[in-house]
Image (cartoon, rainbow, N blue to C red; front, side, top):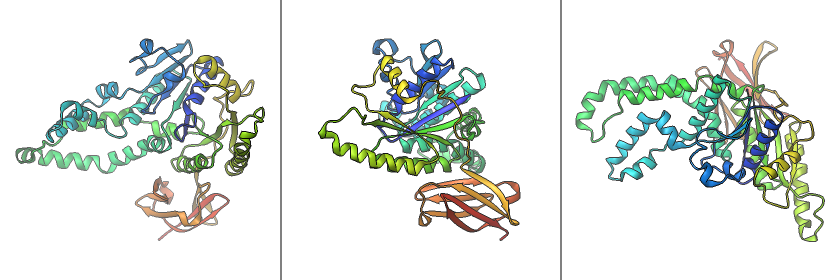
Length: 395
């Protein structure tokens, strides 16, 4: 199964491009699902579905054609499916503060619930082999980073914190519940967390396999948008995902010759040149600005024709370069990380247990080291040609 993950700054056109890609894939014969992971869903709107026909139905896969379905993750449905014990406990705690039941239920939707629910769906579809390709229409960049980092974060929590936390609460619960104004979580709460973790088993490996998962970053030919696209490229690389394409949306077409647009055209030309230089050798695709809003199946098909050349397969594997590798050179081990756009002063690293921790700005990435390198420590590092090489030696 192939996963195509569309991400980028809010408003750049991710949803339309993801929907157009889904249509093209289904036309080529793939069993395709386009899934919205953005809490502010607009996927059904992109297909211009009649509200009274689809309302409430897209929380499950909703058929558009024989080989195409769309899915907007409905967090209220997901809470009933997966988060019942956790949500019930959070609601009970919030009620003790005096807020109403309705407010408590709204506030009990914790950050990350929607992303994890989407991942559970993807994992379920993978196991059931229901689709050949899943196109993920992700939330804006920051939320997308949370989405792809969730498996690693949850795995770390389950490995290091969960058993200790569960044991402590089990021991003190009988006494604490007598004196505390808020009851501690029950065993059902912890069982719920364990069940959720089991449903995510294998999703991290799926996302980090470039033969199965590819990230398509969507941007506009504007400097402010480009800066966020650059940061997203680094973050996805650090999280082990492969970006195989940059899609520059809403480029002024050559047919626009009005003098009013001269400054816009010059500005876009400079940014486009910068994009080609920055992301090489990653493929860059340009999509023109249309004369109309891209809404409904007919116009999405028109967008697909502009996005993909005749005979081009959107599901093809374009790039499989690993964002980091482990090697042995001249008697010492090295960890090599691809860090486009990172300056030397921005990179920090240290060893923690059997992990190498890399920091860029506020982002931290834990890289599990193989057994042969687990007892080594970082000796020195060099950043050359967008690759950070960390030498690992005995301390």
